[in-house]
Image 1 (cartoon, rainbow, N blue to C red):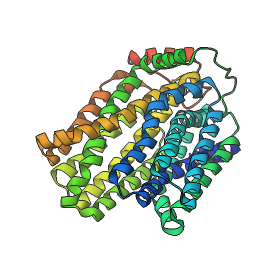
Image 2: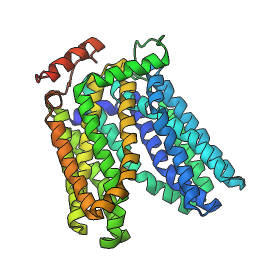
Image 3: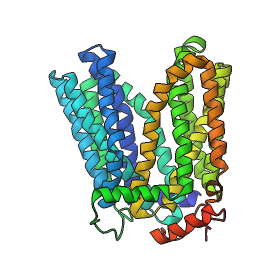
Length: 432
């Protein structure tokens, strides 16, 4: 394992891609913290804050499918560089407005809407670039290594935003956030290598046809449909039971400081999960990842049934490790089993399903809590996670899909064949 990791880190293109993704994740995670206080400095209004935060997040949902189509039509590398450049300009624009004292709420909303749109194009491009930037034999190490860097940066991003606020103020904080995006753009521009989709020719079909074609690629893989359906439910549960109802329970039983410890424990678990996946090598990686999602449920069950701080911290560390285990297994499975020319569009459909689940869970949290009681609703959410995960594991297509550790990236025709064998319950892909 150490030898393969060292091989990856000796590749200049991969190092730059890793650095770009880490810096972009850091800047993206810091932005909402800076944005919240920028709005509150203008108008101490929860409504105004909600409008600006929504202006940033809504375009991510609405445009992610378009982002996938564009990334597959042209160079993913160029799309990623352009998106990072736009993000740099939006944050620099906010910094200039704040530092000159001319900022208004509507200006923040407009600039952050553009930033959210850039993120919608960035995500499908960079997710696909990770797996296609290295030799096929190293994909199973590249994905967890990048995930570990991005997860750590995302966890530290909020703290980074708070540090910028405390040391430089909102305006200079946005300026440094823009600098982080700009550095990511420079690194991404220099991240050449296999990276950048050898032999891909410009697409001559209509964008709408590309979108339909991407949906066909998405729906014809049963394992993909099953897991996306599973995680639509799980993400809705987590958005409603954990993120919405969790603070309500914590306020009464754990206190705000206790809830802060619990939230930090999730980050610790995710980092531990990433480190673990760097060391393990399993054949049926997707099955392991889906099975790991069963370990997300104890956090909800403890929170709802017996919310004590020590038990909850342990459960959340385990749950965080399980989430990261699944994410790495999922990204690797997508990269190795979806045709390279459709990868960004397929990932965009997957991301769209993920984002769409979040408001569903948030909207349903209140009515379900009113009907069942807050803690009972959270327990039911945990049981639903167990049931959904067991349902996903019952699919032969999920259990039989095997990791491919060697050989070239399969063309579309080979992917079609492996999906057929996976659906029939045979070894979908055998490492050579």
